[in-house]
Length: 313
Ligand SMILES: NC(=O)c1ccc[n+]([C@@H]2O[C@H](COP(=O)([O-])OP(=O)(O)OC[C@H]3O[C@@H](n4cnc5c(N)ncnc54)[C@H](OP(=O)(O)O)[C@@H]3O)[C@@H](O)[C@H]2O)c1
Image: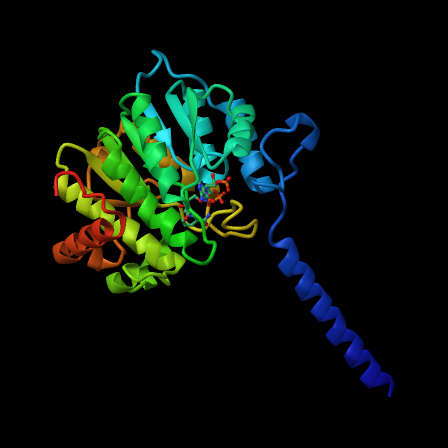
């Protein structure tokens, strides 16, 4: 009887230890909330990991001399890797215009990134707002770099509108920059292209497929606009609100790929039509994106859905 009790105790102990080891694999950063003065949306729109990184940038990134002239627009710069890239580029002295979905988030980002040149506003799940946003962006003049970073994993047709249609509309309506950067995901590799579904009245398109769309679209733009450097990145699985605090990949290397491509100083960053992970060309991707017929079919489907032609098609 006693032996049975000991075995049970040992099993319980091992179980508790395994659970403890599992939980302690990830240590939450020690973010000092008192120093934040209400900034950065800790545990609201940003994880502790993102907030810690924003504080790292505040302390460590110094302005470049001479001050760079490059003008950069980043969509979805109120949180996550878009905000981290914006914060880094602003700290280096670049002129950065940020984007928020609504007035409330615009106030948040003005408080978080007060040195941003301007904030443009538009909910990317509302296609009329996206068209208005394109006009507002054009009213600010030309950009050297535009980063299409905003993204969501929410359900319904929101994910399709935000991740796929909005970047198509903005790319088609906004004055051509010198460099374009699109944010995809490695999850695109498992997706299947179903363009008929895209044209149905209630498209049923998941996150991975939208990330295939955006990568395929970037490849089409790179082929059609030879005067623009067009690249796609995957940040990896990183600990933003979308990725969650337990995400395994390196957050700094994730958003720094956006910064590195936007600065475009390295020869390796001056290429076009490539897919990058952690500032290196990533050779493993879904090769359907290189298929010209699929690229043209996607442009055609976008035109049918939005009635906006792709310029230079
Ligand atoms: N985190 C990952 O592991 C991971 C992996 C692969 C790819 N990505 C991609 O990386 C990009 C950035 O994501 P993140 O991880 O930084 O996520 P995040 O922290 O959730 O940030 C997403 C950004 O997009 C904005 N956004 C979402 N829906 C919008 C809408 N309807 N209208 C306007 N803006 C909208 C958000 O605005 P609010 O702050 O107002 O919500 C926020 O600024 C996305 O394209 C995502 O798909 C992320």
